Image 1 (cartoon, rainbow, N blue to C red):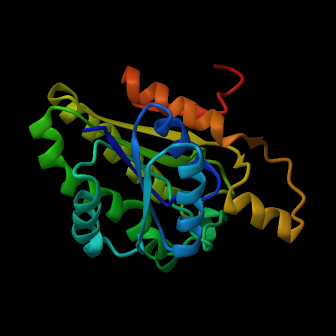
Image 2: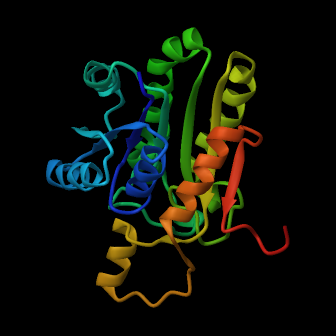
Length: 237
């Protein structure tokens, strides 16, 4: 039976690129997002490329619904071998730490920390029994390198990063991999980049191709020689 990757927060940018990159290697694709019409479009595009995929609607701000969602994916595909978790929320924004409050952090707590933890918990029995599995977490670079004025929900990314590092250390010997890729740029073709274009925001923030990020994820998945990757790489590295 061919392997399956579940892409949580699947959209037109990184999610689509990850699906195509893993699909080219024979993976079947479970796409998870809020909007059915976007899922149906992406499933059709992947089918045109000869990649088997199915869409699953879900609100990733509701961690209590994760077990049922995982069960639905398993019912359709029979297994889940890898996860890429990188949802986008329209409420995502950066702001000064001096203006960050409990209400702001609470608004993103479930989607960016609690739900990924619940996904791992739901999949660990399968992965440890099989001796293989992978959880790939997408965050912003501010989760790794805090920047004054760019706090907002970034502390949640830092907490999730902490969890991924600990998780990999505990599970690597069992054949289960956890890694995180932190992006310090706007992702082309993504919902975020579209919003920036619509608002006419003048920004010098770099733009990266999601195909390049997906290629790095494939490299991390196959080599499993690092827990963390930054993209673009800092110039002084």
